[in-house]
Amino acid sequence: MKGKGEPIFGSIKDLVFIVLGVVTAAFALKGFLVPNNFFDGGVSGISLLIHEIYHFNLAYVILIVNLPFIIVGMFVINRQFALKTFVSIVLLGICLNYLPYPVITSDKLLVSIFGGFFLGAGIGFTMRAGCALDGIEILALYTGRRSSFTVTEIVFGINIIIFLIAAFKFGLPTSLYSMLTYFTASKTVDYVVEGIEAYTGVTIISSESEQIKNRLVNEMGRGITVYKGERGYLPGNFEVHNDVDIIFTVVTRLEMRKLKNLVNDVDAKAFVFASTIKEASGGVIKRRQRH
Image (cartoon, rainbow, N blue to C red):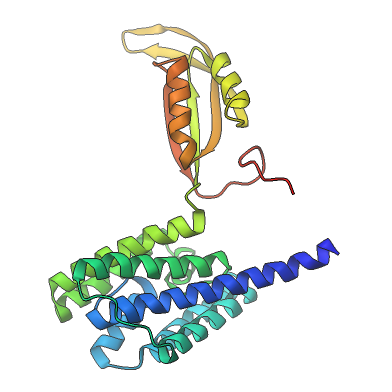
């Protein structure tokens, strides 16, 4: 019974995220960006530009502009992704046409920050449901496979074009505020998709590795991996070196300060460096509540 219920629960959860994302994104567009002639990056930015220049209905523009990306997504990703994305875009169009969102503010700074925040939250919620309200990433992924450019470079290039057009058509201040909107939306998407507990990989090199290993496992409850290495080889003292255990562990962003304090307490001279991990699974990463 549990196995049969999981797909149903997953579908209901995805539907809730899609509806929440669509309603939130529509609120950002009608409550902040559209009344103040502001823009975003990606497909949303392209749609807003077309709407402002030619005064076409934004709901239809967003649907038409996204259709090619949905078709590409069917081949680049899968049919389920394309179907969910299509449903999301249609629902967004319905919200834009029929829900009476109030205009919240005309203050440019507030529009930039909170318009970007709500738009990013909406896009993030739909991404958690396995689809997208903005198809620019699909285009970048498709193009990236056929060129030497990375996905980030392609998205950046497209957004530069959008903001340049906005600058020529509506003035530099509008373009600059729109860049702030895009930046806020991007950061919000990261937080919604990855959560505030985004994972960080930490490497620790210390002569007191045994004590650090013990405290990481027994005090912080972290799993660790130990590499056998050598330390030393300093300029002017190259011949001096010795074996050392190199400790690697994964913690959440919220645990980073605690880890630094722990290591500093054991060995203030320890070499510690960290790197962001976009996705992690398995191992002792996060303790789950038992029900």
